[in-house]
Image 1: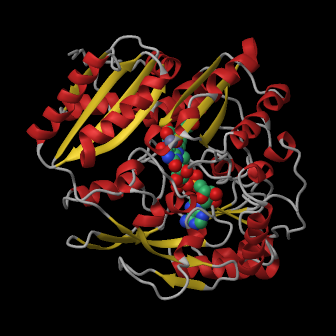
Image 2: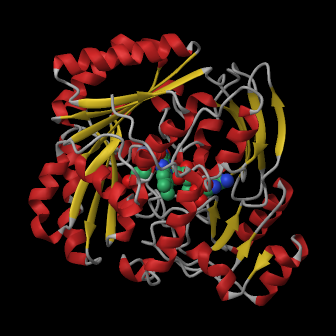
Image 3: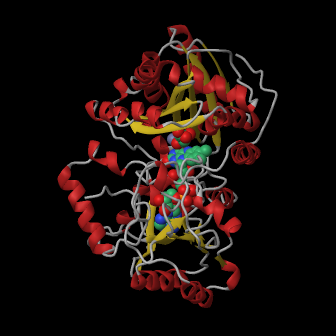
Length: 505
Ligand code: FAD
Ligand code: 2HG
Ligand code: ZN
């Protein structure tokens, strides 16, 4: 067993470092409207009188109009999209959100809701001059029931802060993702974020107990029940989970928190070929059963470039593929013995070439750091195209070699990694510089291939601004029509996050 972990960089530090690298290393992105050739819809334009009105609703310091103050709200995390908003509003209460929306609806002013701005499909930033409504000041925990595990909080609470809060009370948040230090629970719900442990704790349609949301006309919809069972008619909360701010703004959330596992172990394995990962996954499910909490994979390029770019240690040496496997259980000796036995057995079978198993928190964190930072590490190498698709498991990795071949020397790197347990692969393609040619070699080609394989063009990141024109690869025409009808019903003037999710008719 290899235990050469010497450098313990916490995720939070990495996230900050990465943000600095990201901000320092790139010039301002091109305006989305020019890059993607979008025409402004006939919304109202903001006038001085509108700003004056918002200053009466919010205090002056919560109405941002200075270009430098507004700029960060116009640019997305990956620095791919850039809007031209001139106004950011920071409400503190549901009532303020409601008053703002009522006014915007009457004056046909478009609004872009923004949480932690970590979204990866351009949904969180404006395209033109939409008003940014930031949830960053709606960050209070309202109540927590330690017995049932029901947490009720405002939408702008940062996921990691919530997790720290409930951990102190022996529970955990039911989702975890690399952006936890910045993303908001309201953003998570609006994107139906998946993350690293969906395999174990399920998706947000299951763990969200209730939401409070504000419709485009300012009406507050109170579905903030914290009951596990509530079959009183239509399950309206689901309309807001994953609708990316196009049907209503989520202001409060009730969510079920599972128990803090008493025992956590992590295994990190080197594997020869992708087919072996699938066999390992099947074996892990049967050998580890209910304690399996994550089964992640990454190819060599993902891990070696992340280790190199961010100077993170790789606890095992170079292999074509890697598997990160985690268990959440209640008996440390029993669980780590189970995992060690699994490692030994699969090393004997030849599915695992080498590996390490640990229950040491710092060492587990080091392994997770390597995995969680893949998303960002490539940003230092050039322009990154990101794809987030789900595919039948037997075809899970098939697009990576296909894209490598198609792009040849035009791409400096094409790599795949993701949540095997959810059939969700992330494919990152790095080119030295953005060009429409590179883009047209990738899109719609990749989505056509996903459709041929009966996958989904968005597994967990959403549709946002980048994918509405491709949504038909995964949604049937009648389903799309129903989506349009729902939008018309809930937001007849189309002021909520325009240019996102729904394709142009
Ligand atoms: P934003 O980015 O601010 O917004 C996302 C969308 O939701 C936008 O359309 C926005 O308009 C809307 N929105 C935000 N708040 C509200 C609200 N209160 N009401 C209505 N609409 C709202 N995603 C995953 O699913 N799994 C992962 O493992 C994962 N890992 C990531 C790792 C990194 C390093 C990064 C940068 C991103 C990752 N993401 C992942 C993507 C992103 O973090 C998630 O989509 C997250 O849920 C977005 O939350 P946010 O608060 O940043 O939302
Ligand atoms: C992850 O699983 C995230 O790390 C981000 O969903 C994926 O950035 C990506 O491509
Ligand atoms: Zn992911």
